[in-house]
Amino acid sequence: MKLFLSILLMAPVFASAATEIIYNRSANPYIPQQGEIYRDNLCVEPDTNTLKVRIPEHTVKNVKVPETTISAPLIEEKEICVRWNRNDSTRPSCVKKETREVQLDDSYTQYTYDVWDHRKERPITVQNKRLENCNR
Figure 1: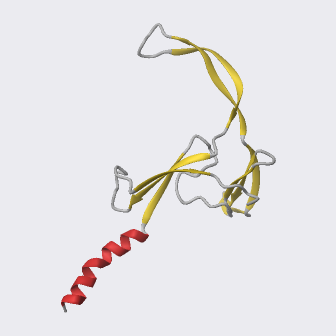
Figure 2 (figure 1 turned 90 degrees about the horizontal axis):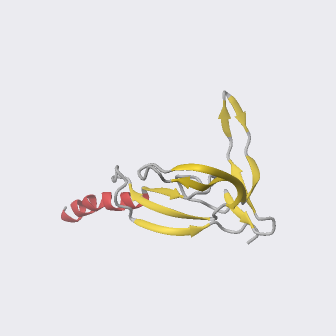
Figure 3 (figure 1 turned 180 degrees about the vertical axis):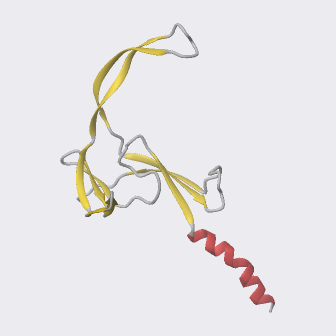
């Protein structure tokens, strides 16, 4: 009986290990914010300097969109502030902007949380990872 009770008390410990929530942080808009990232879904093609992104089947306005694969360049044009007006030290404002080519980052930070951590305050693990090559 004691053995049976001890096994029942250990059951939540084993169950929580399989139910972890994964969040990803990156400045790259193609990296999903939640979930594990696999080479089949998102990878880097170093020869062409592009990202290969697989978009799963989904529904838009009651129309089923089939699974597609797109290639997105790792270089993006962004507006960057070149000159700032710092007269108001609490709120500096941008005076001059330029459009420049910026390399998108192929790395991200992965946070793993326990399901019971509702506020997402204490990650179980924090790992810095890079996207894998497609032709590997």
